Length: 117
Image 1 (cartoon, rainbow, N blue to C red):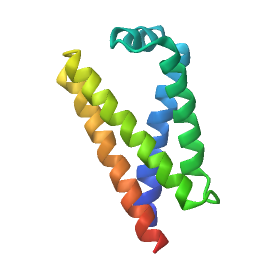
Image 2 (image 1 turned 180 degrees about the vertical axis):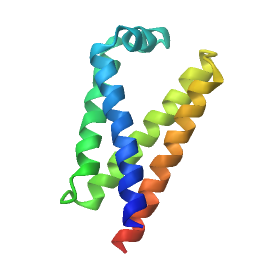
Image 3 (image 1 turned 135 degrees about the horizontal axis):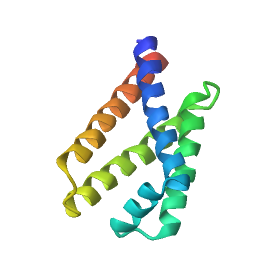
């Protein structure tokens, strides 16, 4: 269970880190967020929140209550991304990626809860 937890959490946090990096430095991703209709400050806010969530999930000493809020925030990010890309009529592949990572998020959370109790 511990192995599944850490593998799923690492995959998730690598994706979040890559995404946050892209929100700051990738013209393609910056333009993509604008094309979805989100203001520029939202892109910065998402990047900062993703980085914060990465640290919360990776540091074992952080209390589980904070980890729960990080899972909720990440889940909302994926749901928002799925809706935004669907409304924008982006390729289905983009939403499949978001759905897969949402599943990885759920696996990580379930494993954490089993390890806690």
